[in-house]
Amino acid sequence: MARLQPDLIERVERFADRVTDVGEEIDRQGRFHRVVEQVVAAGTSVGANFCEADEALSRADFCNPIGIALRELAETRYWLRFIGRRGWIRESRLRALIDESAELRAIGGSMIARTKRRGR
Image (cartoon, rainbow, N blue to C red):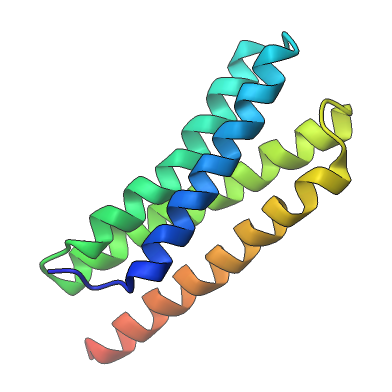
């Protein structure tokens, strides 16, 4: 059905790629494998859920994966901040990615609010 703009899909895919790059970097450093798994799983889930929402057949089917993506964005932000606090990657290098997670959360939250308003 393609509900989302292609540039938004590309944006969340780039976000997932960049989060995966962070995971690969800390994996090369020999950091805790569990942290690598967590940050990569959360970051890539964002893209998967936006893509699922893009093909939704109903408003509810659209809002559910976007809601999951919002929670995954919050988790990704947590792990990125954790990685920065530990000094595994400089926080200044992670800042743009952390900011992008906040922007994507704002976009997703707005989409859910608009969709629910239209459903009334």
